[in-house]
Length: 381
Ligand code: HEM
Image (tube, rainbow, N blue to C red):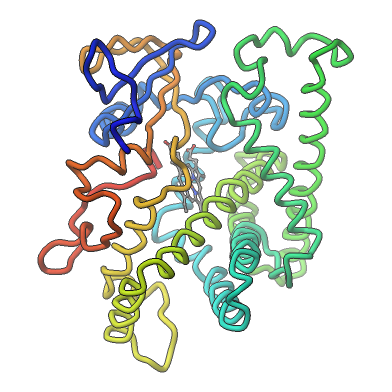
């Protein structure tokens, strides 16, 4: 299957492929070592994102959107710094974990009552996790709640705008100056409508959170932490964009991964049995596991890593852009080239993941059952 992924170059299968789209170079990386060498070790040269006019200038105005923010915007550094500080394990335990656990318990209760509705229940769970960790918003009771529909629509708009090539204006930026009544310019009005619906939704959620904090009722969440410590450095509009992008980045990815996990449990019942036995052995049976138990149950971490690897929800990851000319493995990569790490393809590399189609959490463990450091997904995070 993997052999069909990347085309032949000079009669040989290559793990790096370069091609041009309307004069713009695109590089595909098909091996973990290439993704790590370029996107992590040479981050200073590949830390930029490609030009996505609709995402960067229409939906967000100020280029703040996470995952598409460009180095030329002065907000890029601020945003990276704010998120790096807050997405570290220690910080997460302060503002995210307390809000996540009640949602996990609710998920389990709902799954136990209605296992046949697992997809809807999981979608509801992820929206609740993202709402309560980012904004101080209580859990929505069901999938019928109108807020779910609004979040799904906002996520769809943001996601669509990030697909390179979806809008011609990404390759021909002068088009953005033409009036929207001209034939073929409907995208302009559409993206401004999208901006309105995204902004209105997340401004409302921001205001509710701010109000709760003023009333002394706020619970720990990302926006609370921004409001307490960051508002000297960023504007309210920038804060709202961070909140909206977090919900966008976390919702579909978490839904997809949790659904893959359920599929794994159904297809490979022996994996579920083993996971249950490990938890029973290391966590007392009179309570549910929580984040404090994670170091004692490396098998469960390995199981999650294997879930990410086996069927990743981000098969193309998020594209990077080269900030200067570079040479690598015999290739000359020009400034401005778009660089994709082909996550799913990389995860099927037989050298790193022998028998890659098999679901085997043990590949992430050493002989003593400890995590062995085998890499997986999420390059650059
Ligand atoms: C669960 C499955 C997930 C997968 C497979 C995934 C994958 C990725 C990938 C491949 C990137 C691009 C990294 C890069 O090359 O720059 C990324 C970026 C990002 N992800 Fe995730 N992600 C997941 C969940 C989440 C969640 C739950 C959140 C939020 C709580 C999140 C927040 C972010 C943010 C903020 C970025 C942008 C980083 C930046 O541009 O500086 N992700 N993710």
